[in-house]
Length: 201
Ligand SMILES: Nc1ncnc2c1ncn2[C@@H]1O[C@H](COP(=O)(O)OP(=O)(O)OP(=O)(O)O)[C@@H](O)[C@H]1O
Ligand SMILES: [Mg+2]
Image 1 (cartoon, rainbow, N blue to C red):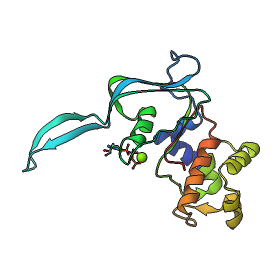
Image 2: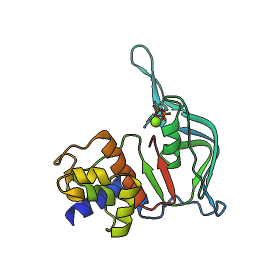
Image 3: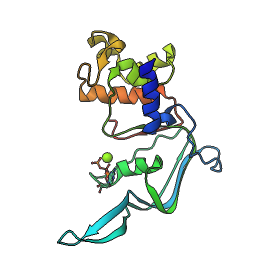
């Protein structure tokens, strides 16, 4: 129970409560089946500090524009892949949809609960089950479907205690693929309206 409470709290802190709650940044004025609408937006990760060759600050008010003139729409039921070269801003696009970037121009509007699987999947110290539930209540049927959908059944069979196996810092090490599958299962279990999957293949 304590672990659940900690995870709930962690979820709140790192913004993952969108997993189970309505996003406070919902924009109900979007058309009914539009989930994400980015309109001619220029987006910034924040300020960069410009220094001269002697490391003296020249300008600390210089804002890097990381994405320029972006327009994008995603409707309910659509599956959209964003493809591009290394470093071109794919992860930044997803972070923008999570409202993590400053909108310098245009607008970024979303409507619906989001589940975000980051490019670098993460595991917290605890059981496999706790890593998937991430503070949500246990539902037998939903849990089984998440395991099935993310091809975790084989992984769980190989672990000594199945989904009660401790992983993360105080437990066994999981492979990169297992980390990715568990992170994906966490998103599936969250039953969101919008799934943002960074490099899931
Ligand atoms: N958290 C961040 N804070 C500040 N700048 C960032 C952050 N994440 C990415 N950037 C910058 O945004 C630019 C685009 O990076 P991004 O990670 O979005 O590319 P990508 O298309 O996802 O690349 P990859 O194919 O390697 O995953 C880079 O110049 C990077 O330095
Ligand atoms: Mg990326």
